[in-house]
Amino acid sequence: MTRQTDIAALLTRSEQQLQAIMKEYDSSLHEQAIAAPLRVDIKNYCENLRSVLDYLAHGLREKHCPTANSKSRFYFPIFPDASQFASQAALWFPGLSSSAPTVWAELEKCQPYQAGYAWLGTFNKVNNENKHGALVAQTRQEVVTRVQADITGGRFRLVESRKCSFRKWCIHWWGSSEPVHTNACT
Image (cartoon, rainbow, N blue to C red):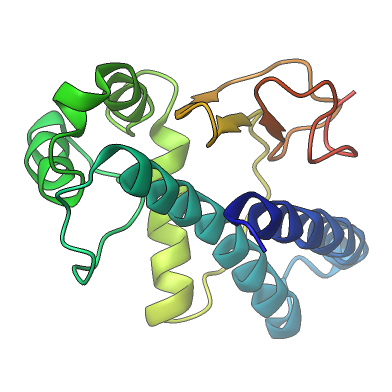
């Protein structure tokens, strides 16, 4: 299996999870509380989406950072300020800023300290708390977000989209006529 196939599988599963979560969530609104099993489902959904970002990071690093230590641990960069991004992303993706400046710029554009991307920092905090701390209490807040990615072209972009029929993740591949997440957007 290729990384793109793995990403597509994660996105397909995430879409299925999201449909089930939204159905269960809507039925739990009258209780004014989200039951623990639903919070587990939400945790698993967030983990799958985070995995997509990390798989993208691996693809970028393999393609553009041949001097990177293959044994060092790294993730899709999500940092609260420009200083942390510059220093840590340079360690995780050595030479990327010079070998693929457009990719570096796209990574920097989608950081939580950039206008319109605070949601990514919140997503990362919730995901980490759900995985390592405790299941996070849920409140309903909808945000329009679409993630576009193209590993083969070495480009990706996280963009806010108002074209979604309801506010949730929508993942598209650049250069394809159909979105991978077919039910997410109209």
